[in-house]
Structure formats: structure tokens, C-alpha cells
Image (cartoon, rainbow, N blue to C red):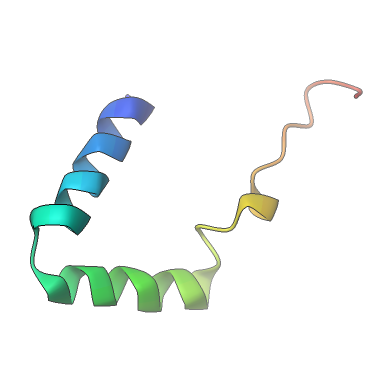
Length: 46
């Protein structure tokens, strides 16, 4: 599911409407959703 989602987002960014890219960039700056520091796995002690 995650791979399909990434493929769809990639295709939208590559071939889609430029306004979609601008909206995604604006949203990600406000919500901090695409920052790698937000992805953390607490399931292992390492």
C-alpha cells in the first residue's frame, strides 16, 4: 500500500497539474508532514 501511494504521488508531481505541486509544498511547510525527523520507530530499543 505504501509503495503504491508513493508511486501515485510521484506520478502526480511529475505529470500532474503544477498547482497540485504548489499546494503540496505549501501544506508540507505548514504541517511538517514530509520531514524525515517525524518518522521515528519506537518499537525497538536501538
